[in-house]
Length: 315
Image (tube, rainbow, N blue to C red; front, side, top):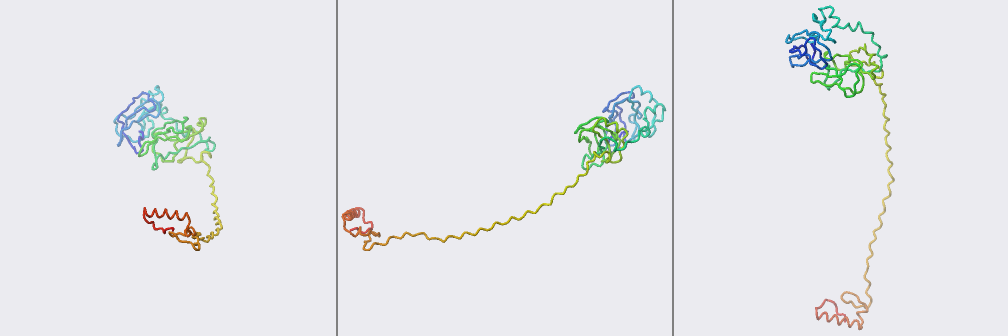
């Protein structure tokens, strides 16, 4: 029984969408499973053939991890599982000939000793990413890449479920999948726990066939996978700027002595001059001349016609 959500502990198969002997492809819905919170399609992670359905539709609630079906690669292998009955832990207890076909040999027995990390090609051990500020753990519901496949920056590597959302885990750089360390639907994984290994070249994938990571990202994978510490460079202490030397104060200009404007004074009256109309006419008004008599005559005519102007008669 798959864990279709981070909190799922059991489920009921409400409907099988495949029958024994039928082929299916990755992404096909194999069954509809009901939980206490939702009804979800159980999708195939790879191509295969249904060898045997171990649980009938509506057969009751099953704990996560209990066997519900057997799949094989070839249709010709289906007949070998006609009498297959798993035990409670998922192992076969029926036909002895069927068990080896369904259960692969233990990995520990078949696997070669792990290669020391320092002898491996350049690689990066990728931990469960924190896809939100509050994310502490997540479940890989689906891998969108397989071992040996190349990917580019921005490609979706996997679909990860948290207690709040289902999010695509996108690649930050180009690379090749060296090994998938966690299977889809294998349960909740804490942030930082290794889930996959990436390499730069496809030719390096085979070196990671038996790679086993610890509970945290492998910090000793290669020296290149961890950037060297950056030497702290101290900024030079700022030099106090010298205070500018004040320029010598130029002596205040001595105000020039105010020079009183020259007052044009009226010329002193000429001795013996006669004052006519407030003006000094000098000897011109004092002497009896033809010009003076003519001016006097004109003045009299003006006074007779227009009246006195206040001027003293010239003669």
